[in-house]
Length: 611
Ligand SMILES: Cc1cc2nc3c(=O)[nH]c(=O)nc-3n(C[C@H](O)[C@H](O)[C@H](O)COP(=O)(O)O)c2cc1C
Ligand code: SF4
Ligand code: FES
Image (cartoon, rainbow, N blue to C red; front, side, top):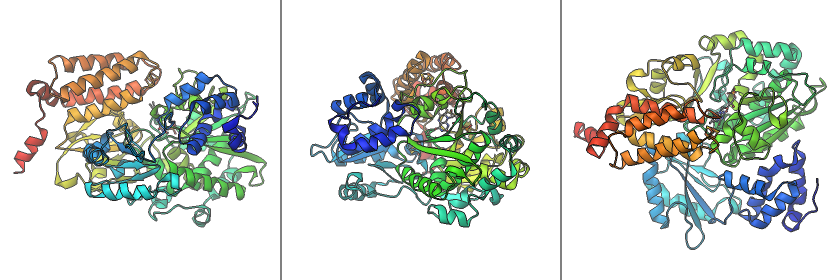
């Protein structure tokens, strides 16, 4: 249905029509459409809401639901400069709270407020996927970090002159994080990182880029390619670790419906920032992997679902996709083999749960990112009700190496059943935070050493080994290989390989409070155990941290964890239970001390020992 253009839409009708044309269903264009309108108007007014509903042919309530769900969509005007301060664990560990206080007092406003002159709006936000910059902030679209007290004035005054609305980005998104090649750098993604600038098409071709995709068409039938990926032991690197080739073999190829590829570039798991690097430095590696995955699965339409805040990544991908289209690597009759592939870059709008694969599909269809009950799995009933392969950016980016070097070589680089290398995001109390590419199965203790060891010469207290949803490890548990099976074997998980280091000065009550506040904030609210449980846990932990804990609190928390685990639609609640149970069990003394003595003594003990 194509409703008559109305006043606001009239101005942007041509752009809006182009956006809508990219999707199989009109309403799927709602996020890009609202983002376009917000960019032009500053916020989504009621008039724009109504016009959007009419234009897409959906009820007004559906537009309002979407608006209220995604944090990047605004229903009110904001200041010219939006300052978002990250409050999640990696930033907290490196002084994020103090930075927030300082900025708040300099601007004279609290989070959620705008200065009276309408210049600045201050917000506290959850992890922005840049934990190596901790403590970091976002000024309009630009990521800035590590922020120190001395840098606050220049950042704020610099942003007054620049800022997105004047068409200039402030600060640097990409930084000098440490990037080191894996032990076998032939199959290394991070070899593209070390130069510090993007490998656009010409540079990528000089590195032999797009040869692997050509070889895939020449050497393999689609079915043989799926088998090759199975043999490579490539695991899904988004978090669940499901073998990639096996997942593809579940995608029915002869239903008569289109088959879709959806690339998960939502990167929301706190502590994880490696997909940002793949996109920023090696966008064509990702695009080449997308072509290979599409060929293997008889796919002619692929979507990249990109985290809404990744503005730099968006600009880079737009350019790289245009380059690939102009050289015939995307589009019609690729390599003269009669194979077509249309790739759509779709931006999210701020919701952790949109990274969960079925939440992502709902979001891509233009709805709130409410996860779906499984089965059916997306392989069978996915995007627009059609068979869909969903993979993480990094999983896809390793495919060209598998094609070029062969499955056996790739498998041999990792550990049993965990093929190849992996990008580890290392952050927190470590001397050199950054992305480290290492073989699967690499020693956690060694990786901590490789990243400079615990900062300031302090002792290790704990490690979060696989993103915020992973069970915490104590310092004496780091003699373990970093792969999906070994970490599972010691009661935690490899997850997204977001490794956060906690030193001896860390208060575990506060660390858990920050962790659970994240899950309470991000619960989509569909399941009561998750919605109520995460909120309740956050309240109890805040009480304990504030010196008002009660004797029964620890048992109550463990009980709540028992009710939440395994009872919900998606794994967010299970992901919340992992840190909850492990912090309480492994650091119970510390929680008991807070309840009994009504304060924290961790920093005191450290100070006394170092007097
Ligand atoms: C709450 C939640 C959040 C998730 N967020 C992400 C994410 O940001 N990026 C990602 O690739 N996978 C994420 N996942 C995992 C996806 O559901 C899915 O397993 C993955 O995209 C599949 O790709 P892979 O097999 O290549 O890993 C999340 C899962 C859950 C339960
Ligand atoms: S577990 Fe939580 S996030 Fe997942 S569907 Fe239920 S309420 Fe939503
Ligand atoms: S960017 Fe702050 S915790 Fe990730």
